[in-house]
Length: 234
Image (cartoon, rainbow, N blue to C red; front, side, top):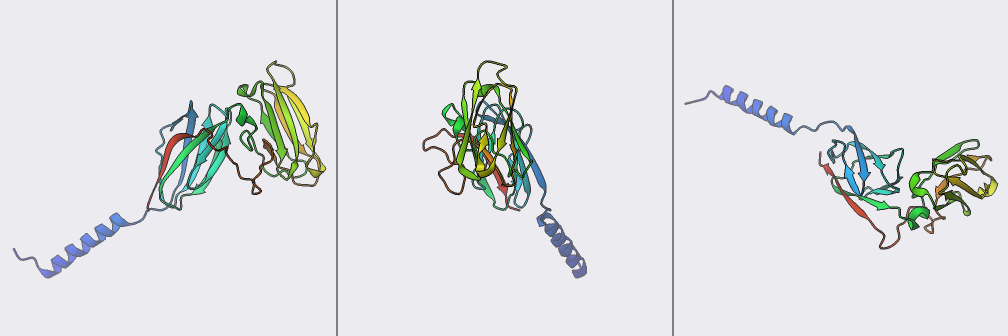
């Protein structure tokens, strides 16, 4: 059967438009992944661990224990623990598979840099609050002023309830703290307030040896593999 040329050209044009439509790129989205780490296993809350290259991705992480949640490749790391979820946002500019890992904070790791808490930069009059959770009973929490690595303080967490429900710590000139040592109990609230014009930043653990201030893990420390985020090419 002979097909008129004009009809053939029309069919080819329609086929070309159809193929072009199928191959067109979708617009980047803002994706939110709600993750929960429980007993060393990640629960996805119905979310798929995959996005498309170019998407903006917000990862919200809750955990039943203290530790560090790490997205390899994009190298995002946040302290997590019981209570309020931690989150970070990034642009999925690179495609591929990127591992999620969790570094539990055992008794020795309670004093690791930034494992429990790290404030934003505090201006004069601004405060940072941390609530003591059950798993910290019996521990001593060392902390420091990230703007002056020589200034440290400590919080002793008593296993006896009612020792102190609220403790206020002043951040002073030169990165100093007052009082330097406090004792609290589980469920107590600790509040640091910047009382001077200097910038202050409060972080758990001793000052980092690495001058750029990034979190460091001890060699051979436990690392739990939670799975991976797939970033598909657009």
